[in-house]
Image: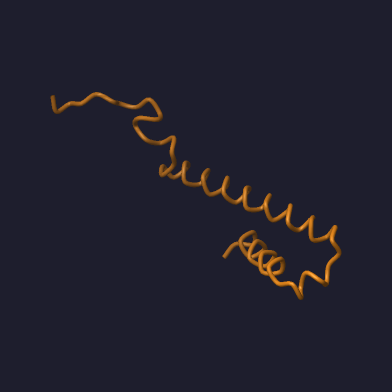
Length: 74
C-alpha cells in the first residue's frame, strides 16, 4: 500500500473517532479534513493518468481519440 493511501486511511480513521478528534483543536481538524479531500483528489488524478498511460483510460478508445471509426464488415 502506498504512502498516500496509508495517510488517507489513517486520517479518515482519526476523523471518524470522537475520542481521537478531541485530541486536536478545531483548526487542526479543519486542516486535516481539507488535506484529506485534496489527497483523495490528487490520488484519483494520479490513478486516472496511470490508466491512460497504460491504455485503459477514457482517451485511449477509438471513438474518443479520433481513431478508425469505419466499419469494414459492410
